[in-house]
Image 1 (cartoon, helix red, strand yellow):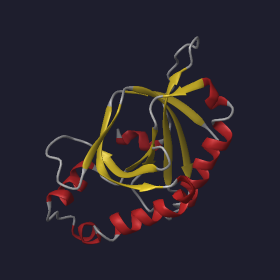
Image 2 (spheres, rainbow, N blue to C red):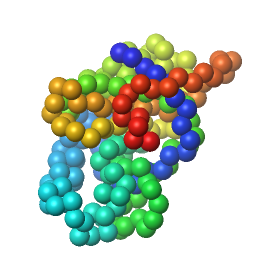
Image 3 (spheres, rainbow, N blue to C red):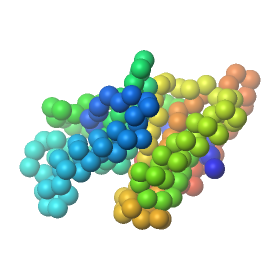
Image 4 (cartoon, rainbow, N blue to C red):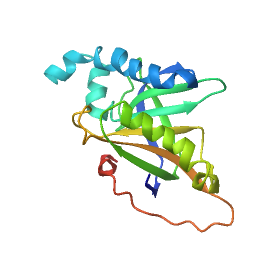
Amino acid sequence: MKVTYEHKPTMTFIGFSTSIRPEEGYQKCPEFWDREYARKYARLWQTMQPETPVEKAILENGIGLFAICDEKEDSFAYWIAGLYRGGQVPEGLRLYTFPESDWAMFSAKGALPKSLQDLNTQVWQEWYPTEGQRFMGNGNAMLEVYSPGDMQSPDYECGIWVPVCKSIGEETTENVSTMTVTGIL
């Protein structure tokens, strides 16, 4: 598993969320995408002609290119989101802001949801107990990053970004991510 580190300015996202218990994440997150995104906006993806303020916001902000996992006491808020480009926030959508931060960035190739779920397991079972322990988290949330394209392709690219702060006493170094989806930001 390859990790790169990159510094990013404050980033604000727009989207909608649900609450999921951690032990149900690998089942409930894909269900949320299917129920609240794929089915709800199927007509929009066929016509690309927004008919509501929410549909307009989806297209203008790329809602669906990101997901946010925001850890809570006994659950996490799971957001389907896009990078907020300004303007009105329609009813039913909310904003979420990540502060300026260094990010640990991981990428994967393969069909969803398996490739992303396998990457998530690697991040938290391999990177975090070893290299990840050198860092302090910068907040309680992380990003899932999706590239445009066929999400069932073996060549589909996605990623997980974890906001981090360097541990006390370590020098700050910045590495530029080679993941192609970084062009989204």
